[in-house]
Length: 177
Image (cartoon, rainbow, N blue to C red):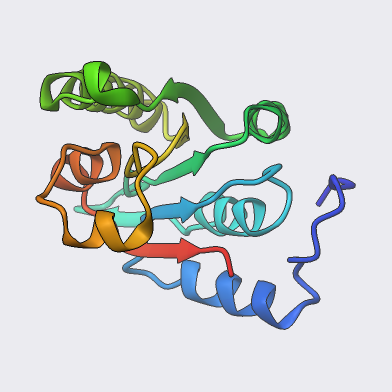
């Protein structure tokens, strides 16, 4: 792997080895990474495992399962670093999206629009046998400034993570410690 931005999650760390092994499992083709940070730690390990998936045989034809990495990042600078880092990888089609935020833009329709874009970009990547890396800037579930106790007891609200998970099956979720 190329020189990173300073992540401590590497192939030589216990966490890194665990992620690598989990993501290499045959049934894992779609991964949700919360949060990307600068993209050079857990995100890279998860992506590399998807890139190295073996071809599947389908009636004598060898083809790849559609492989997708979703990632959220709240910090604008980290998001930009992650996008640049992942664009440098071969075999990956990176799409940058923005999570609808705020009470005006966080409607179910706005989340659905984001998912339609994600789906279109993933389809193009998969058709080219590339890993689709769908990077979403913003919160997976907007807090709208409320405390955790208020958010936990409030009624269900539209969110980017819900919209994505309703459209795409997710085989593995990683939440950075």
